[in-house]
Structures are given as C-alpha cells and as structure tokens.
Amino acid sequence: MTHQHRSVAAGQGAGWSRRALLAGCGLAGGLALAGCAEKTRPTIVDQGNQAAADPHARALKQILDRRAKAMEQGDERAFLADLDANNAELITQQKMFFANLRQFKPTTFRYITSFFGDGKVKDGVHRFAPVHEVIQLAADAGPGGVSPAATFQILAAQRGDQLVITELTRITRRNGAKLDVSGLPATAPWYTTPLTVKQAGNVWLVADASVTDLDRYAAPAAAEAKGIEQMWGSRTRFPGHVLFFTNDDENFATWFGAGDGVLTVSKFEGFQFPQFGVRQNGEVYDKQYAGSRITVNLKMIAAFGDDPRRVMRHELAHAVTSRAAALSPGNGLLGPPRWAIEGFAAWTEGTSEAYRRRAAGSFKGRLPITKEFYDKDISYNYAAAATTFGFIERIKGREAAVEFYEGVIQHNDADGDPLADLPIFNTVCTRVLKMSAADFKQKWANYVRTGA
Image 1 (tube, rainbow, N blue to C red):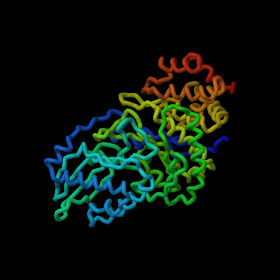
Image 2 (cartoon, helix red, strand yellow):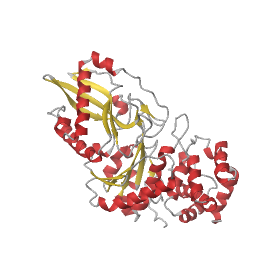
Image 3 (cartoon, one colour):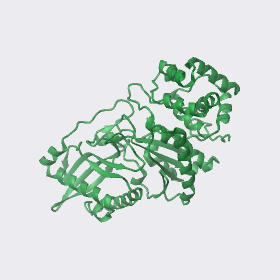
Image 4 (cartoon, helix red, strand yellow):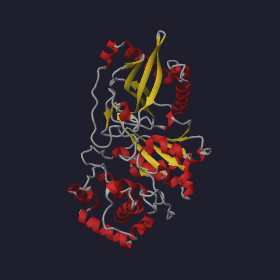
C-alpha cells in the first residue's frame, strides 16, 4: 500500500509520510549521557572503602539494599520507608514507579554505587552521584554481567537518628552536564507515567491512560514479533520485546528522551530505543546493547490512516536485529549505515514495489548517506533504502536479503567515507550475492529505475 504523504516540521523532511526511526545519536534513547562521540570512562571509586570512611554513604547503601529487596518482595511500604516523609511529591512518584515496575516482574532490580560520588554536604544534605538503578526485564539480555540501568543523583539528610532520601533526581541529557553526572538516562516511561502492562508470548505491551484498548494489539504484536524472529532465524537477538503505546503527544516526546533531540517527534509513528547497560562495578558498557524498547504513537498512526501492525513490524525489525549491530565508537564512525538499518525495517513491511516506484521518481543513483538520512529527503531516503533489500529478494531470495543485512550492519559507516565505498562492502556483496559491489550497485540502480 502506498502511504499518504504528511508534512512534518520545516527542516525535518517535508512530505515524509510516516516512517519511524531507530533512535540513535540524535535522540536520548539508551545512549550513554557522555554522548555519541568520544566517551569518557568514569573514575572507579572503591565504594567499600568510601563507605567505611563515610557513615552516610554506608547508611545510603543499606537504604538502597532495602529498597531492592522490597521491590523483589512486592513490599511497597518498605520500598517507601526511607523516603523523606515531608516530600509528598517524591513519595507519590515512587508509589507510581513501584506499581509500574512490579507489573513487569523484573528479573533484576538493584542499585550500583561503585562510582559513588563526592558525598558533598550542603546545609546538612548529602549528595551522592552517580547511582545506577539496574532494571533487567525478561526481554533483556546483555553480555555477561551487563544489565540495562538508569542513573540518578540522590540527596539524603539526617532526620533524627535516621538518614532519609530527600530527592531522587533522574539524570537525562538535559540535566546531566549541569549536575556534573554522567551515566545512562533515566527516561523510561515507568518513572513518569502510570502504566498498564500486558504480556503476549515474549512481547510486553505497555500503555498509558490515553490507550483504553491495549488488548487489541496483543495478538498482532506477538504475531509480528514471531514473524520477524523466524525471518532472523538463529542469529543473535534479545529474548523478548517491550512496546509502549500512547495517544498522548507529551508522553511520546518524553518517553526515553525522544524530544531531547532535534526532531519534531510528534510527527513520527514510532521509535526503537536500543539500551546500553552497566557492568556489575557500575561502568557503562557501550560495546553491545543490553536491551531494546519501542514506543508507538497511535495518534499519529490514526492521523496518517496507517496500520498499527505495520508500524509494530517495522519497529520490531529494528529491535530483533539490534543486538547484532555494530556500535559506533566515535572518532567519526557513525554505526551501521542508516540505509541498511532503515531500509531493512521498511522492506519487512512488504511494500517493496511501492517503495521502488517512490524512489524511481527522484532517483539519485547512490545509496543514501547516513548523516543526511533524516534530513529534507527523508521520504526518498527510506524508499531508496528499502529498494536495496527488495532488489536482493528478487534476484537471490528472502534469506539472502537477511544475510546481506546481517553482513552490512556488523560494520560502521564513516563520516565522509561510506561503508558502501569500502573494500569490506565488496566482501559482503561477493560472499552473499556472488557479485562485486560495483556490479551490485549498478544492477540495483537499474532495478530502481525500471523494476527489472
């Protein structure tokens, strides 16, 4: 089906119809707060030595251990017991968080204080940062000892003979530099929005109050996940998937920090947010993702007259395959080519010929450039990217298209030096397609222009 065109904000791809993004350097997502380029490794502090020297640090660690145990046992009273009774807003927010997270039945919930901060004291208030709140769901799977996490600054004060938490500040891209705290953004919906959670197979569907018919998406989401997983075969993937649904513009922009980037996010139908994790010592691990989250904008899907199932399929294509993708180490490397990441997801929608016709109308004769992908030609870029896999499916079959994708996403694009122009791309083409990169690009271009 050809999508109806809808304009987005000026400068963000006027005429682009619908497509959702793989959230990356332009968005907060699960990326380390140090950014998408150079990453600064934190100085590891021996928390045991600090706690021995600082009774307040020791007391806070005991508080956090009690909170972790209370979450595991479903004891809301114990979870809230060490919060400042004078801070009604904090208690209300933590009640909501507790209720939200218990619905997910996390496999791991704990705090890591190995990088415990300075413990500065001002007016009797002690500051501790960064503190990592580790939340691993059954859908997640990081390398050994690595789990998804969120970073906080904690303020604590003495109330009589008891230390209590007076503030739990979520660290985001917007406040991390000001607070001088680095780590992983605490922008998951369970921190800000009352949620309803349902499970269908290995898919968790989550909704805010704006969605009253979550059940209708359960079977389609489970079926789409199963279909993408079957196509991906035995290749590396996560054991499950978590999708957050909303009709609320503010929530869609807030969840996972989507609105912290340069895009007008309310015009998008969905995002996929790969999640970094932390090691057991609190070090952020940025060599492989530890989980994935999806957001679905039902309001925009309805406005476009689109099919929620197709949007879920697109996002699940990102999520299922993201664990196998290379990560950008910075230094001008941009992660896997955007044409491959977005083109593959668009191809799974099953509308290859519609994308080919759209690309043919203004074909540029080359694969889209990663840094320009979401600019003014975004509609064309999606279409052209999708045709690469439609072409391979036509000449070599569906499995070859998947194998080609897997081969490409294991390598980084480079600023000014696209992967498609490098010898390694020729190696992938020769191995999978039995033709050189030059022959592939020539035959692909002919396919886009003529359909042959």
